[in-house]
Image 1 (cartoon, rainbow, N blue to C red):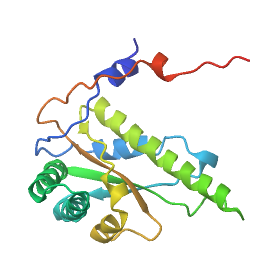
Image 2 (image 1 turned 45 degrees about the horizontal axis):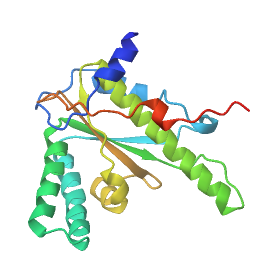
Image 3 (image 1 turned 90 degrees about the vertical axis):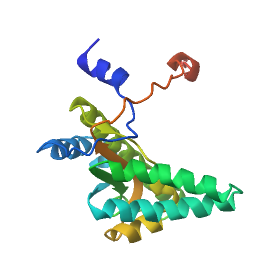
Image 4 (image 1 turned 45 degrees about the vertical axis):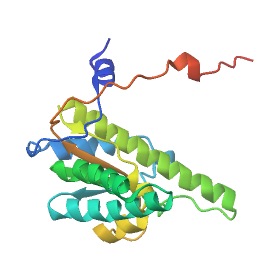
Length: 201
């Protein structure tokens, strides 16, 4: 097995972080890896907001408030909703830095019909996801933990306001980064054979 194959198998999501800062140059390497992801037409529609200091708590509180409201609307008890939001907040604020992965459609092709316009939007989202995955793999290669949080998708307006994002940046995922305070859990994967079909003619 190659070193990369071993990295894929050993990587775990980190949900609890040590307070230690990342070493000099590590974040730059992680972001550079993100920009090496494939993107349709090479439009590179990913954008990144680097979040540290008080901005972490401001973002966590904004997303947490929306999560609590959504859960209560779903019929979840208030205390359970607050506990869920507190767990998410700790994940964000314990990491020394986080990267909000966004997408933009500013450089994408334009079409006169909504079907193809929608496909361009989907392609930008796929490219942003590829960039986020590259970040997580590069972090793992450096011995740095990361967690993929999809919460920004559920409250993009709250995220934009909390971080005063540039116009046209659409939040896709939040990646807290830092040294793991505890080992991540192994989560079994279904075999690829169960999830695949073969077509030869």
